Image (cartoon, rainbow, N blue to C red; front, side):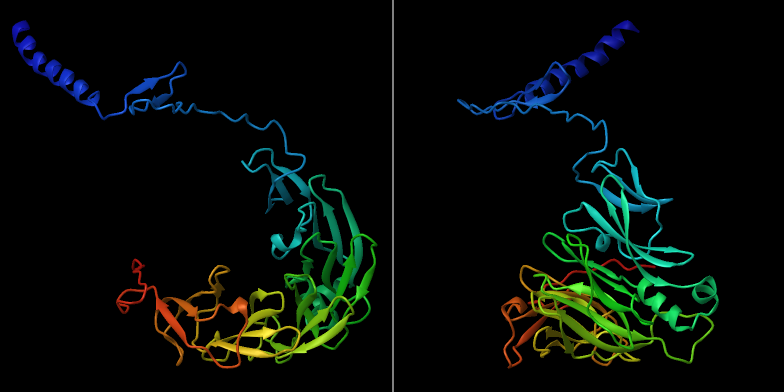
Length: 383
């Protein structure tokens, strides 16, 4: 039995020695195990002066960073911040808020503006980051319990919807000194206001019968785009979003001039984003096609320039590098490109401006069975 084991084990020993010799043969990089157990590859090039890379262990944070950066999120019982690695979660506000938290944080990241609800109405509150000190700037709208809850179609209720249900705050780009916000401070409808965080002055920018919603700064901080909407009967069992689009306006901050802009077709605002400091993207909708007729609008002159007539499925995005548009499409519209995801390449980059003559454009397809000269990509079928 012992002799049999010797005969069986011997070939394995020879095989192991042969393997070791192969691994250490010329042309292969030998390895070295350091004192702390790290495996470091050694260069085999003659005369090489490369030093082995040693592992580095960054010390774990012992507290919340005093100057950031932070991760901020809405959680149980308010708004929280953590270190980038998720450590030391700290609550900076107990307020429960609506809307996009990214819009609430100032460009410098040292403050956030919140719309806070309570029994007497809605307040605009500024909260410091990371300390959490809060200051009430103004009452946005006042209401009694009966006005705010039980009478869902009162003028106070409609103004409250505009302030609370939509993103009603927008910080100016740059140092974030100015804050655009929507409130019903001096009337029964929601209007556009401006808060100067240095002088603490509040300026009313608009006044009209419709409810102002969705303030949005131009990238250079010179214009504030916003929309006016209404809730009109007949109403169903529950009050949803505004069902009438009354207009689109921009306010030039330097002199307060209000610029009337062309209104897209449809009942809701169709803001895609800014192309540059003075042009934004919008589109039309109807009962058959929710998103179609993509175009650029000059915020100063109001001139609209068509970009793409084809329909797309709700959302579309533009690359800041080459101006290409990415969107998905459904087959239900008459001007649809069919099922799939598409790239749209304007011949002239939109950021360089548009000429009066419609330039030739090309469509790139990302779905299977596209033309050979078009970028294509297949997607897995979903059950």
